[in-house]
Amino acid sequence: ADGGWQAARSAAERVIAAGGRGPLVVASLPTFKSDEALRMPLEAAGAAVAPAGPSGGSSGGAEATRVILCDQLFHAAIGADCGGPAEDAWLANPVSALSGVTPVTLVERFEAAPGRWISVYRP
Picture (tube, rainbow, N blue to C red):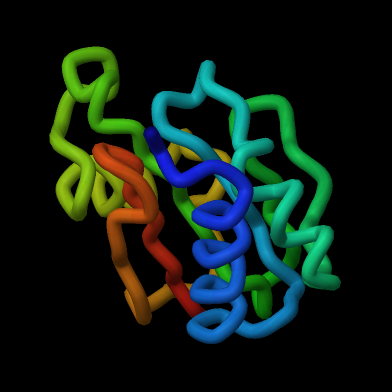
């Protein structure tokens, strides 16, 4: 129903087109949900993805592109809707794994599968 491997591969290609081949830092909202649905197709496509950190991401360095997956099913747990509000708020939060780095700009946001949003931010 969510498009399976082809949808995951297409999402990875779109992320790479927007953010380059790396370094990429991938995180997931809610933070208790794995980022593997995108991490695996990104790595299969040859992208340099930073290892996952303990709170949903890794700093990856100042030059890293930040990629945030957001699952709308968990909007209540996240505290905001996916597709912009949740991702932007989490990125701006000083305790998030991706904050405190070089300022980033949103370069791409899309719904990869029903209710599954991906946001790509570049330094």
